Image (cartoon, rainbow, N blue to C red; front, side, top):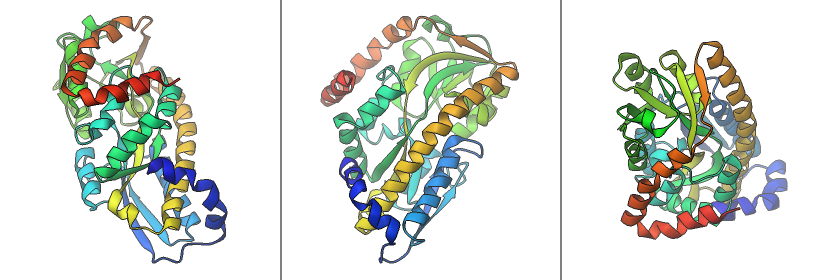
Length: 327
């Protein structure tokens, strides 16, 4: 559905610019975990503005930032049920409820961010999007969430051996716990809102995330070492409750998708700028950022993660191979 809808955009762009849909007004609520200053916060506000503009005010979206409507697992369930209309979700925690979404959660599945977007815009991404829509969460745009790397408060991580014995916070997905455990650590699922306190009190030894998130929520204040493992490149999405989306007029559907696509392009520019600024800010605050010159030992350590996952989910083999074969 995602691919089909986006292909209709050139045909409807003129109509959307000239007139609003005649259908009844729609007021929607959108959830976003990120705080002011984060690229996704600005992009979600841009999305709401564009939707209002493209529908002549017939569709309005109120965006609730900073997770005020609940944690991501809570908000994800609420979007599935229709209690919240729209969410800006990281795909990691979607994996436990949509198996195909686990594709992006396999360590080192993508060569870089550009490769990730080529996969998402191709047949592998279509398969994943269709499965998400069937689960009640229709993706209408992909956001760049950069590469996730490890950070902690005890020292740099240069090899899997440095993770051994460390309690590392991960998002709620068995692949993430398995990733840390494969290096001898203890992968610990935990709500994002709890990470700062847990790092400061020693409940966990470290966590993993991208640089803008590491900086924007202040984790650099309680974790002085950021190691560029770049083990996961996981996108975020704008997802709409499927029933809500399907109940909209065609003009409204296309307006939402067009606005989401424009907001995603806006977000990607901001993301690159924010990543550079975040790195500069945390280094100025004293954080040690270390390059990992040879990531082969990390990649080799993930072999059991792939083997175990595909043994338990043999029907995912073709999708994994399709992503890996994408140029």
